[in-house]
Length: 330
Image (cartoon, rainbow, N blue to C red; front, side):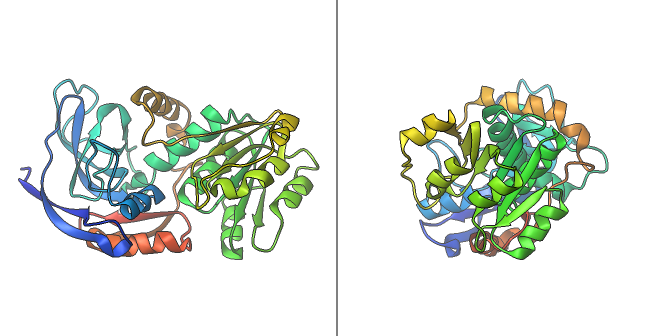
C-alpha cells in the first residue's frame, strides 16, 4: 500500500545547511515513462549544496533536493517496460531524492545486482555517470594513458580512479591531507599528491617522466586553469565538472595552442536525456559486470533523513572520504 503522504526534506530559503527542514509532502505519481521508487538511501552531492545556497532548482524540477537514490520500485507509469513493482534499483533523478518516495525515468534507472549492498547502490548513479561522461566520453581516456583526478577522495574522484584503473589507465590523484593521500593509494592510484604541501605540476612531471597527464578531471574550477595546462600532456584533455569559487576561466590561448589541448566540461543534471541514456548503456555494458569487485563505492557516512543538514555540513567541510548518504528508512 502506497501512502498518500511522505516525509521529505525541503529547502525553506537560500542559505546554509540549517535551511533544510523535514516536511510532509504528497507522494508523487508516476507519469508516462516514470517509475516510483520507495527510497532506501539517497546520495549527497555538492550540486545539492549549490541548490540549497541558491534556494531553488532548475525550472520545472522539484524543489526537493537529491540526485541519486536506491530502493524498490512500487509503481510504474504507462509505457514502462523495463521495470515492475518489486524490482530493486538505483537511479539518477532530477531532484526529489531526499524523500521516502521519488520519481525516476526508466531510462536512467539501474538494476541492483543480487547480493549488492543497497547502501552502496545509492552511491553509484551520480558518481558513475559523472565520471564516465567526463573521463571517457568527453576525455576519451584510453588504456596506458595518464589520468589526473583532482579531489581523488571524493565520491566522483574515487569512482574516477577505479574506472581509470578498470580500463587500464595510470591514475594520479590530488588531495588535501595525508589521510586522503593514503586512501587514494589504497584504492589503487599509482600516485597521490597532497596539494597543500606539494606542487602538483612538478609532481605530475616527475611521476610521468615528463609526459604529463593525458586527461585531467577537475572539480576545483578555474583556480587551476593555468596549472592544469602546465601539467597537461601534448594533445591532452582537461575536463571540468565544477566552476568552484572562481567562475571566470582565464589562460593564454598560446598555452592551449601549444599543447593542442582540449578544454571542456559538463553538467550532468542539465544534460539531454539521449546523453544520459548513452552513458547508462555504456555503464551497463562496461562497468556493471564489475560491481562489487573492481568497482565498489566508498561510503564515508550515513545519516538519517531528518539530519540532512548535518550531511550538508559534513560535505562542506571537505573532510569526507567517499560518499555521504541519507538513510530514508529511519
